[in-house]
Image (cartoon, rainbow, N blue to C red; front, side, top):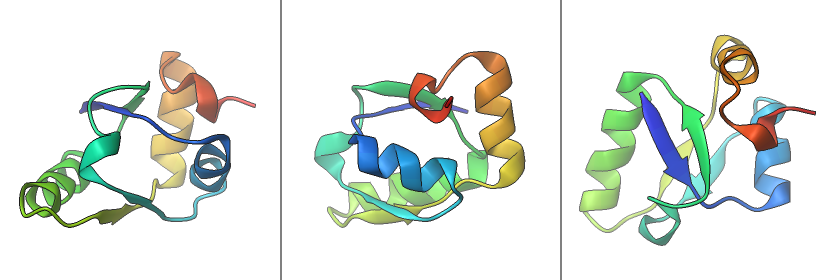
Length: 77
């Protein structure tokens, strides 16, 4: 599932290293395009609809897929 998030360089570094980051509603919809697991997307959307932030992290497979697909330019090193 493709999603666009407005992330800082520090947040991109944390995602690249497999750590979790907090995402708010204001960050959603612009910025870097990334491929994430559909279950992660659904959980994130539920929390954002309630007005709360969501903590997301990416698995090693998701990180590699973003590097191969050319999305998530910030995830490439």
